[in-house]
Amino acid sequence: MNASGAYVTFEPGARLALHTHPSGQYLVVTAGVGAHAAGGKPVQEIKPGEMAWCPPGVKHWHGSAPETAMTHIAVTGVDEQNRNVERLEKVSDRLYKGEN
Image (cartoon, rainbow, N blue to C red; front, side, top):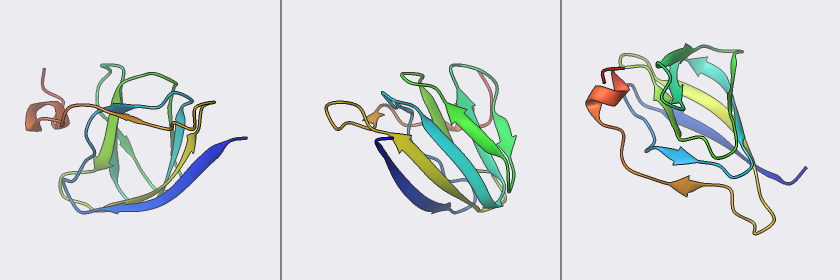
């Protein structure tokens, strides 16, 4: 498996910009409460021991819940050109709150 890994902590209310992964990404929450949304689906809460899968090429974001910090392990596939992410626009407060 060609992949990279990261152990990341988010302060309450923090989130990454929208992004995609050419080979997908697994997130495993180790502490706190996280938030994750992929492919235009509703925001999902993720808790310690739970895993989220971000399929290849699907626009998504993840971060902490509004009132709780969150730590996760991210395992991200790397493609043949050694790419693992394409960063896109910032996540608005409305999108973060699950509003359309």
